[in-house]
Length: 389
Image (cartoon, rainbow, N blue to C red; front, side):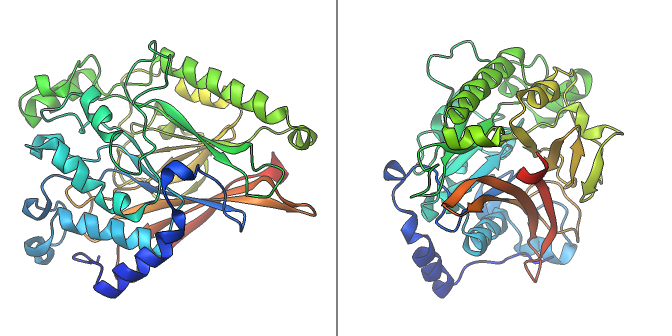
């Protein structure tokens, strides 16, 4: 494991030069690159608190004296530099609320590398983000005001949706292609809540009491209103896409990815197949199976559900044609395993190369980046391919 990594001056300059073409978000929607790729960096469970004053969990004793939240920041900077993603997705427990006397500052510091990069970034909340002085609603509202974020509080004219931070993003085809004005990749973000029947974790003044509540009542779940919104949104996007003559020839809707924090119970199914990665702890799912997996599978466009929450699970596995993927723990103030490197998941979406230029999405692939001495990339995996759709 390598901790204490930070960017030197030369690396910082190179990062700025690499990212400069990204431009200003207001003038550039999400779009595939000219080389027909779109890359997403998933950051799961940073558990950020108070910077250099925050200690690390589950590292070797020799590393403890110089390990802090700054190692999480350095890992994020390092990964952005190496991967140069088109979108950064933070999948919850971005801060560890109980250790954050100033949650707005902790949120700003946690997302600082993404903000500085000028790369678009999006956020969903976990079960720990609202355990400080900000309510769950306030956390999402504040996050949505930060620079370069595409995060949304909730869709407009959709007051019926439960939770905070349910929204979708559309990714346009390559510039100059027949699909440049169509969303060829759709991204759904869902709030999986915190604890069952818990109005707000701030009502529980200590981590111990919150843990007792979790043991008794379990984790929360994605509600019917959220699933209804997702299905309606998916239906609309598929209809818009299939109205295009080029898309109609394929008879296959634009693929989609879904992100949330707490995994549904199906992540623990005995029927999972093609598992790539490891499971080193149980699935800490919700206390109720709300039918989310059935909704996602029924939508037909969602090809992968990507979550966080269980830090030492990092596998992707298939269930009835839907890929279920963990990100693996990213942050150093979060539990892990000493010697088992913190990690990030990278998703690369590729367009189909046709005689007339770039077409629709051809494949969705993934791998992981480890924060070790060699910054190792592992577990290359095909999640979906148009040829087998």
